[in-house]
Image (tube, rainbow, N blue to C red; front, side, top):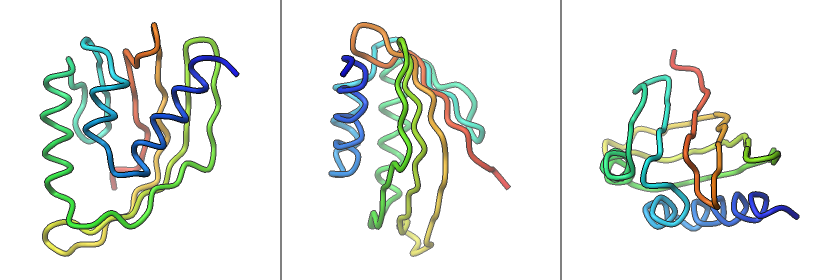
Length: 118
């Protein structure tokens, strides 16, 4: 099992446990670029921590996080996930997405999410 294979499974375990901010600090490089259809690029760990904290603060209750498909290649990990949560306004949110990660020295240097925005 490659190092990236082990690391992606550890990262997903953090998320399943609700340790999203810990995961950001443990698995993401200082120069991380995260790309999302709804937000574009967020550059640098500090900016991504700020963005992710705003997301965490908007969640009243996590209901589900599943990653039914995971694949790992040379410096790349790709996973599909399904998430359900209730936000602080009592709206139920359902997201299905794919994340493509580029890894270097055990940290994610780029992550791009693919999901429908309509």
